[in-house]
Image (cartoon, rainbow, N blue to C red; front, side):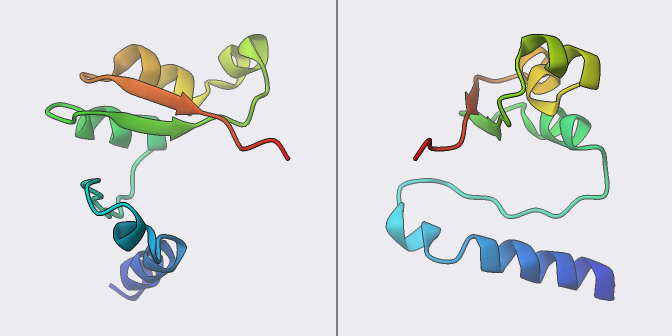
Length: 88
């Protein structure tokens, strides 16, 4: 129970201000103990959009490494947006 509350606290701190900044976005904060791709695909039915990040390793590396974004993109039951970090 303490582990879950610590993880929830970390998630809450990472998302501070986003609900106020984007009030029209339905943000669901859920902590699960599951492989990331499996959890996102399982949560995708009924979602309007699943958003996942990409580290930008390239298509060959992502396939060799079993990229979460690659799996979600091909297995999700809703639209998927793969976003890359903002280049400064």
